[in-house]
Structure formats: C-alpha cells, structure tokens
Length: 522
Image 1 (cartoon, one colour):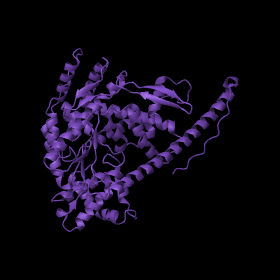
Image 2: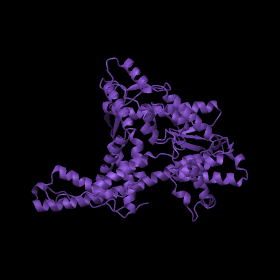
Image 3: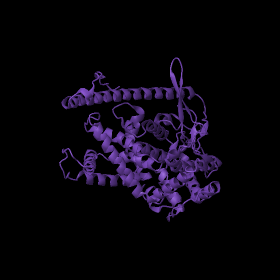
Image 4: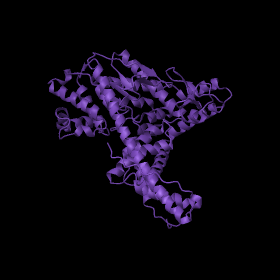
C-alpha cells in the first residue's frame, strides 16, 4: 500500500470581514496549503482503497475458478442489453472480465492444432505482448526470437526473467506461453490437443463500422478495411499530428510579460496553451491518445477524454520524477489542452465518420425534440428503445437515517440531452453486436467453437483461418444492406411529422476489399 500523508489539522473559523488585506492574503495562503494537504491525504487514501478493492476482486475470481475447475464443462448464461450487445451474466468470472479471468478460461473440448495452429498461438502471444504492429509472420517470428523467455516464463515465472510480466495482458500471455511450450515439447505440435482460445480483434472497430456505413475509403484504409502489406495503425496517425501541433505550440515565445496583473483573456489563453504544451511536449506516445481515439466514435466527452489522457500523463510525469500532487493544477490544465487537440485531430482525419455521426445526432435531436425516445430496429431484428429519462430523487426520512430513492420509470420525462448524445454510439454498438451474432450463427452452422467479447472473436487455434473467412463474409453481408437508408425509412414511417435531413454522400470504398484485407481483424 501507499504511505498516506497525515490528515492536516482543521483550520479555525475566521470572520474574513473583520480582517485587513494583508491578513486576508496570509490566511488565504494558509487555507490553500490546508486544502492541498487535505486533497493529497484523500488521494492516497483512495489509492489504497482501490488496491484493496482489486485484491478482493482477484480473490473472488480465483475462488470461483477453484469451485469450477473439476467440472468437465461449464456454461455461461448471457444477457442481451437494449442495443443487442451480449454479456455473460456472472459478475466475477467470465470472458468479459479482467486479464486474469480470461487467462483462467479455456474451451471445454480441445482440438488438434493442425498445420497452422502453433503459428496462430505464436501470433496470439505477440498480440498479448503488445507486438501487434507488424505482419502476422513478424509476430510469429517475435515468439520464435523470444523462445528462451517463453520457456523461462513456464519454468520459473517469478525468476530473474520476468519477461511476461511486462505484457499488455500478462496472465493471458503466461497461459499462452504454457500452451506453446507444451505443444512443442509434445514432439508432434500438429496433433497436440489445445483448448486455449485465440483472439482476433477488430482494428478500432467503431471506426471500421463508420467507414463501412459511409463507404469512406480513406477512413477504411486507416482502419484496415483495405488490402495492405502491414497493419495500419490509426492511433499512430493521430499521435503524429498531435505531437506536431504540441511541439509547434511549445516552441512559441510568450510575447508579453506573463507576470503582469492585467493580462487580457486572449493573453491568458495563449499563456495556458504554451505552458500546457511545454509540460506535455515529449511525453505523447501511442498509448496517450489510444483510448481517446478508440472512444471518440462512441461519443466520449471532453471530460472523459481528459481523464483518459491524464492517467497516462501522470504515469509518464511520475517516471520523470514529478510530484503529481504538487503540480496537479498544471497537469489538469495540460491534459485538457491535449484532449481538445486530440478530438480536433480526430474530427479532421475522419471526416466521413464525423459526417455520419453528425447526421445521426441531428436526427436524434429532431426525434427527442418531439418528446419521443429514439428507437429503431437493429439489422438483426432487435427492437431498440433508448431508456434515458430524467430521474427524480426523493428522500424518505426514518428515525435512524435518511434514504434517497430514485424514480426512473418509463413514465418520467425524457432526458433529451442523453437521448441525443448517446444515439450515435448506441447505433454503432447495435451494428457491432449484429456483426458478432451473424458470425456466431455461421460458426455454429459449421460446427466450430466460438466466443466473443464485442469486437474480439475467439476460437481454437486450428480454426482461426476459417473464422477469419466467416467474420469477413458476415461483415460484407451486413453492410451490403443500405443501413442508413433503412434507418431513415423506418423513422419516416414512425415519425411522419419530421422532415429528416438527407443522408451524407457516400464514398467509393469497395466492401469486397474486406475479403482480402488481412488485418481487418488481427
């Protein structure tokens, strides 16, 4: 646990109206010092509470795994949410859980690796290690080049060589190391019976759906819908532009005295920009912008983007020896600057996605403006009605305590803002769930094992190539339908008094390219 700074002594109450200017300034400094010490105490206390929560969660997961480990097979009941997305019901141990959960779960029925199964296990290991920016052959070679470390992870996981602990997903990586070593040491890898699921994940899947909706060739190329020799990395493209702009701002000279007392609003904004840029200049890498890019198509807010970026910037500043608590205001400001910049770059680089998102938002605003919840039928026939309504809390007073209850029934007034802002991401979620269900149905028809976490599709190593074919055909089948036209027609029938805007013009992306795009899912 972290060492928690002591709780500062409470300040005595002072009537500021009786104090002179000098005393007011002195007491203001004392108050600010007290406030900073109190904030620091609370922050470290919260960190320890978070660590305790993580330990409890890990114990619950391990206990569940121990109870089920002697069963030949276990089944997970699923729930479908209002958008059509499927989730396992168990709260602790399931495939949508943490890295530890996923590492503990295997298919009940093993299958021989076959000709290419070991190859895909090696690719899978490279993906888990974060070495997923190279070709599939390069990833397999990565595993071969690190075979000594793989064996060390199996034989002495907590020995001197803790290579696997640095993975993006260390426990899944460790499980894969065991599977690779056992397959090789069997003497006949092709006939080794493997139960370990291998994953194929969409490349910034939300943007893939937007690119397919608008037939956006530029956006589609950036997210691997087109043929390419190596995987395209949308996060790197955004990162380079953000890095360029930050460096440009950081190099600016401050053309005025920053200590003068009568700074104009424009001068204050420029000063904030330059100082923020100088603080984060040199700290921005792919990981800093990744979550913001990934969630931008799901309607991430400015505050959400700022918090995502701040997590990474805090880590990097701590590594450089900064006192995060002492510099909290400056870091907070710099992360807000970086969030604004990242969202701006995203909007400029993915204009097709932005046009489609704006059209969906405008239509949702018109529907919510009539006091109606936004609703539609998903491509696989799931009726979707957005549930967002205003909640009215009320307090029940008892002899022991006051209890606040919330009325969130369907009879409450609409929450118009949430109806509008949540619709584009909810619509895209309905599309990715449709793609997953179509893939699952076809996999079942072919007698293949399949599991999925939204845009991460799992099967046996020997069946990866067939699953890759199935998921591509399912995607093309889904988007060969005029989905936006169907949506507009549906709305025009349901809301005849609304004149909906025209659908944005489509680009020239050929969906058939997806069949030959090797890194569409990877």
